[in-house]
Image (tube, rainbow, N blue to C red; front, side, top):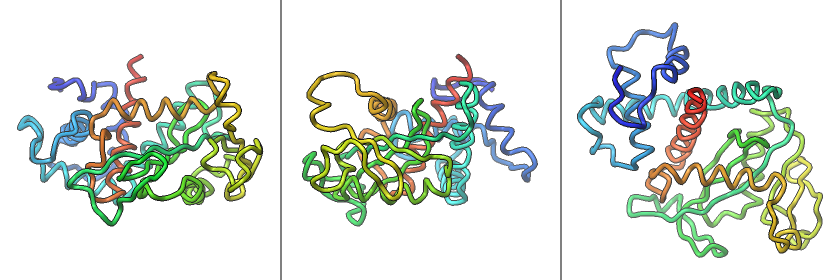
Amino acid sequence: MKMLYSSDLTDSQWQVIESVFSGQRKSKTDLRAVCNALLYVVKTGCQWRMLPRQYPRWQVVYYYFQMWQSKGFIEAFQQRLTCQGRQSQGKAAHPSAAIVDAQSVKSTLVSSKQYTGYDGGKKIKGIKRTLLVDTSGHLLLCEVQPASMADRKAGTLITEQLKVRWPSVKKLFADGGYSLVGKAAEPLQFLNGYALEVVTVKDLARFKVLPKRWVVERNFAWLETDRRHAKSFERLPHNAKAFIEISFIKLMLNRINN
């Protein structure tokens, strides 16, 4: 299949995804074209109705996006690639440590007021993206909440999922936003039962690359290369979460060609 845009899947990348569909009922729709359309939306940030005509109708693409998201297909495939990526580095498929951080993003006119909040520290009205990554930057989990939610509460919610999805994780790294009130200076704490190593303000004043902490910041930088993440363009948080997972799926697939 000829690539129309740089965001489209290469033949080797499609082979990785196609194997997931094997054994399922054959669809009349070209699923590779649907995947390419989703990647185009993520990369360019365009509205559904403005998808180029070379792709399937936007209603068809949106149908598959909602179906794959609701059935957990997107998340499961992303986590499968995380395991494969770790193994390709000579590591165990399941990590023992993770890094957590959050990013507040401005809302737009299409954002739902129900899922929008105000982050007083960042002076941003919108949503908060919380990422959990391993020490190499592979995405483990992500969640989207109102920006008004405190980092520690958001961290508590996402670690509830961590216990189920990645039970091998025993230790977390985070910044002072995840520490207990009045205990930000204590380097070793606990978050929802996990040992939590906190980078203190004193450490930040040294102006150096922080061990482990820079990894998750790089993940946010990777997200910003896809325009769909420039602001909060989704009405529902689970759609925003799915687009984050799609971005990291594409990132992992890009490494196949390298």
